[in-house]
Length: 392
Image (cartoon, rainbow, N blue to C red; front, side, top):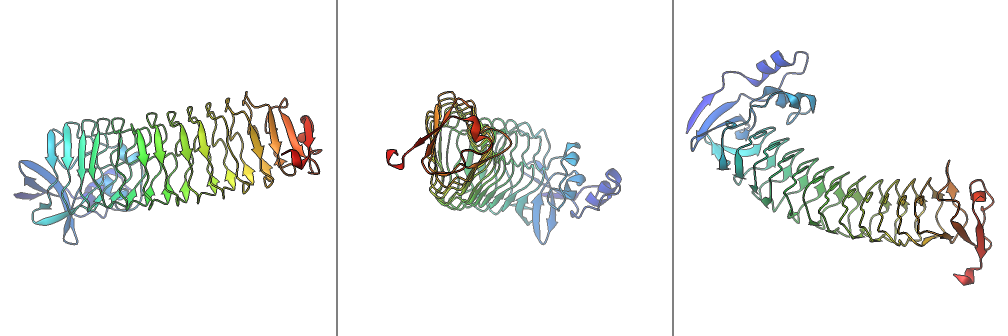
């Protein structure tokens, strides 16, 4: 093993390149050669971190402030860019245990086919494997708990991710645009799936484990090949646009604890035919089911109080809608463009409507005798038929 110190330090180079910024706190960068490959790393608290040698990264990736603009500067990966084929990340460098693959460590290494990460590594850092377009397989040890922002973004050939059996967090855009990634085993210990974590990937089916409490915004946006999803019953939150554009999904059963469907969650799921809403649901966000052409029916729970703007706009197969008695507010254009919809049934008083109409004026409103508010602004535009409660 050969150890040598790079000529520059992170701090001095950073000051020269980005005057006026806070000094970088990254330690000196060293080189150790293992099996003919020179590895760049730093040592802190007696352990090693493999990382790029671009000093500007230290300012925002692993040490606090984040700036995407600075990531556009030339990258100096932890190993020579010409390194090719399958490689293994060493467990030690110069006698120091490797515990982290830091920011930009392999960014732009376009000749690698497979990477095996040694046991003991706890974290894969920001943009660690960004644009490694030829990597087909990655083996992640059970010691890794976090896969950080954009860690594998645009690894277009990545087909297989092994291990990661004890992970807890997959952060923002970690596997964004991994088009060849057809499957991913989510560990039972996983708690959080960040925004855009798998967006535009090739996933065909997902089973989210019970420990997950949050799926971030657009986490699976644009997964056009996805056909099946299984969500845990106790999932607390599904972010805006989480499954938007998953146009081969045909059914969705939402978790029982979910009380709000965020905006655009299933927007443009063109083949979604059936959705099961939780019994305690209170709100459906704007454009939640926008342009779900195949959706033919939906059963709203009695707990529902609000349906947002354009929530079901363009659902051309929707044939029947029954609004529960507790609904308080109905947004703009909620059911516009629902060509098969001829009437909307209301069980309670007329809900508030906003600055525009909730659906086309040729749709008949069916209301229960004795309910109120149908002479208010907006509702006067519709033909209203009153029916006795017994007829329901």
